[in-house]
Image (tube, rainbow over all chains, first blue to last red; front, side):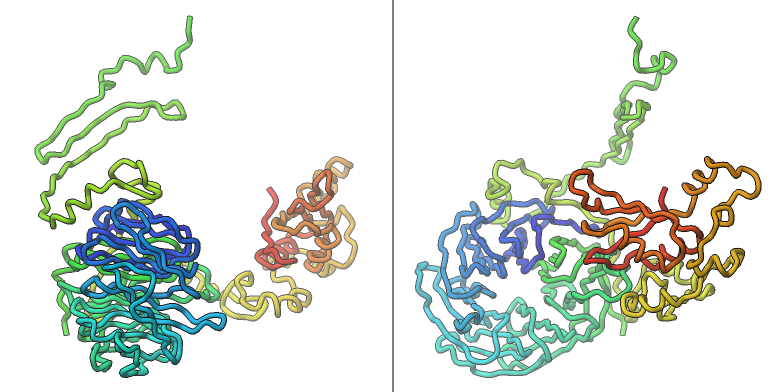
Length: 322
Length: 273
């Protein structure tokens, strides 16, 4: 397959997300830019201008009308997807690390970092009647939350922490209902399955795990040889999980760094075996997103490139031989 | 009479007409002739195949395709912009059940390594199996070792005194001495220019000739150091030429200093042209 290289960022990518139909791909980076692309040919639709700090996170609602982005300039902004206008800007005391629309698009969860005396917050905003005040503002205790996602039917919020544990938080009370220490080092990514009953976590401890949402039980583990920055579940066609990461510090031999050796690894989700790798990035892979129809995926790296890959036909006919 | 750029003999050929034809598979071939920058006639053949793909998409998806561009893309034409979008090289995603996924280590690298397996590379600094310049202990062990290291050169042609580099060597006895004939002034000067000279680049601004000769003299006797200086400010321009007496000394100096850090910059050493 020939990957399409999207060169819209000058610094490393922090997150990429597809919209529900998969025709749009949003990418955000440390260079303050939010880009929107057409995923089938890599054509850029436009940019959302306004952030003055690194943009850490982005999410789009199911109707592709609203886009939310969280940034290190202590704001989260709500944008109109079609024309790039900023509809609302929320100010906080610290940087916003994670944002996500709920399944029904009515609520948005937002995680801010603890810094300079300000505690971490987990806030929930209503986007139907956009107001400056959050519906809920929780100060979760414990190690810093690095990633968070809505569970099914908004029953829970799943949060991944810096110490490698995953917590289930009740969105109405902010109370941590249950915790499970599944990783040794910080969680770098948490992506839900299409029905949100299970999710995949990626961690710097070189492993990725599948956990069931309601019980936080570890269902599968994938151990690699490199710290992972992102993991995603293939929604269709193949029972795969795609993970990616990379070592920041280079070892003595200089050949590895130059030649695009950072790889997206494909693992069989059920059998916990690695089945393939896609190389090409020139720096660690920071974020992976899979198209909702399962026919393509995209990866964003430390090198500032987003690579969109459309699978060849033989990808879909592959059967794992036990 | 005006002199035309093209040779009269080349003009008026039967094949010069641009053609377009389509063959059975629907491939359109366009042949045209151009003159490129070097003045040469170039035949450009373009084979294109147009395939119209009908795709049934969601109404919303089709509507989004029609959105005008905004932000940095405002006013741009429809279609991908080569400044932001490119197609990369073909990558094969080989899916395998056997778990031998780590394929395809760079072949050139492997071939090099295999070639060198037999030759047994030994780092002079730490005796590891890598080149001296790639040694991870270059800075710590490299300093003491460079001073004590014997000449690694294969040729033992030059006698002992010359290799230690501390004794003075008369011009007619140095490497590149032309022998009994041609002993006059000019040839000696010429010989000096033909002496093994290294070009050191990426020097910092406040490096002096003394620093450079300090750095290099441990490899052998230096016949000349030339440091490029800026005319007005007299600061170092970043490069210098070091002429050694013995070629082997220059070779060893090159291997040891190339890539070595000096005053916060990584030096580059090459043979001077």
